[in-house]
Image (cartoon, rainbow, N blue to C red; front, side, top):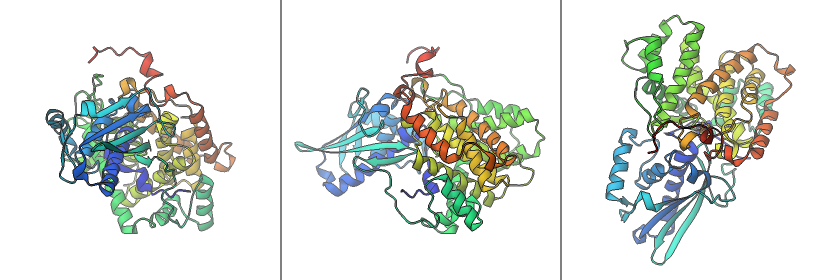
Length: 472
Ligand code: SF4
């Protein structure tokens, strides 16, 4: 069974989609590396990228073409200055030229050299893409699959690539419970011991606080930007107005000052609910505008975990320490990896239950342990959160990660908080459904779900609402 680092479940990237933006970006980067090893890049005369299945059907709305172009231009999703993306794309469309790592300049027209095969689905996975390079009369080609959460497999590969030995190997939730009970560990401690197979304890802490910093900044930016989201749906940003209504005109200079200002207020119950929604909306509005967010475990669902963690930070009676933030994210990452191993985190495979459902489950377990719940209660909270997302379909309107995606993060966050509160007041040994069982059920539901409801924009809201804007 594959070993998955929690940092694989919490990747820093660019919106709007982990499977349709981050994954294809990583696939092209990988292809360029492999191509450079296989041939002399100076001999390449032309490149072409073919997209299949869900990547083709919703690739325009999910910026798959933009991701492909930025990868071909040599940019990395973790470090690209996101504010420059529109200019980079305008320049490419005008000049129609890319430069390979060898320094070789090639003609490349995004409009014709990225081919959307909407009627072809490759057998292995709905998110297939083939990268081709012409050298003389021959074409070198490789096929990749974006299997969710930014993970990429090359044709012929299967999950399970990283087989390193972990101190406490966990394949199913029962393994987590068994290790923690036997060793007297909290989930965060167990995950911390496992994570040392990849990096030192100091590095884990530093990198995880780096993940939180990106989450925090994405909430802050989203709460302080007004206007319309890109893509033509005319969706207005709402986090900005909500933040203003709840807090008044800004009397702070940065994200930490803003958090202090929120903490200083007395909040009614209804305001707390609005704040949680505000945090989630902010991240997903940033995600929809190709902003920098943390894939957690996907981009479409990137607002749930930051919103729940921010709720914990802003509305706990005691100040939340950096160590508590690290622990929260470690638990969230571990729960996400259990879904990846036992089911799927790809909406193209399992619908939105695999995105918002999984993120809600991750956040619920993390908040439960943060609130002092036991290991069994944390696993129970994860189960409750997923149980009430089972069957949730993916039907993004116009293929954009906006409707229903942005609001759906607010629902996932609220359900996570409620699942945690229920779990800490419950006896997990009296629960009738286990997390193991709900993961299996989610996967079975994913297999039974019609393709129309799996990130194709061919069913549900995507075809049953009239979008009241002119065609563009
Ligand atoms: S409907 Fe859910 S799974 Fe589909 S793109 Fe939106 S957030 Fe992702």
